[in-house]
Length: 156
Ligand code: SF4
Ligand code: SF4
Image (cartoon, rainbow, N blue to C red; front, side, top):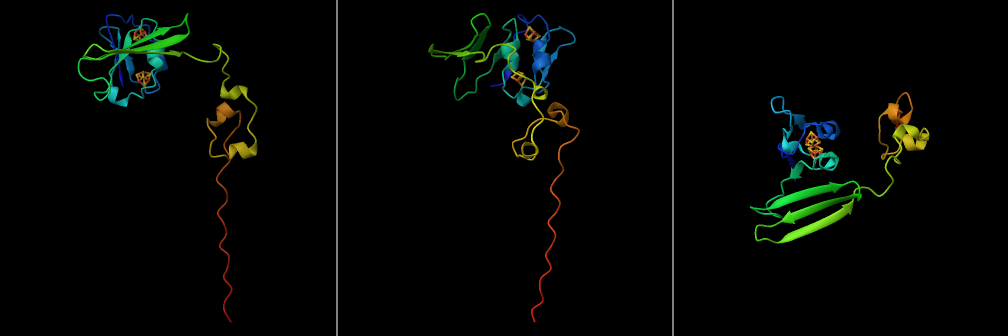
């Protein structure tokens, strides 16, 4: 479900622009309000929805789950630590979902560079994430050397 902005609620603070990993939240140069310039490229991460202090960002539900005439409202309440989703179907039915914004205290997540330098096994592991500067190393280990061809013994 890609996002869109209610421009009448938006005050142009730019939090959504700063947080969007897809770089598709822009401030309209004329109206000075945020706009999702490319909904097709929306990751649907909802970082912008959670970050918006004005509750100005909403989402468009896909037709198979919230058909024509629907609405999907998102409400982030930091003081309660919750994010709520309210789905309204065109026949009047409503569904509400409430989730915690996060399950760990604010500010408790360490940056990758705050951890010790990974072991050589970890650096060669398929699950390694992050660039060298975040791992506090100069460069990642190179690929293993190619295996040498063994010479076949000639049959006598
Ligand atoms: S949901 Fe994520 S990718 Fe989509 S506009 Fe918001 S921050 Fe960007
Ligand atoms: S975070 Fe909300 S209020 Fe701020 S620019 Fe984005 S949509 Fe507008």
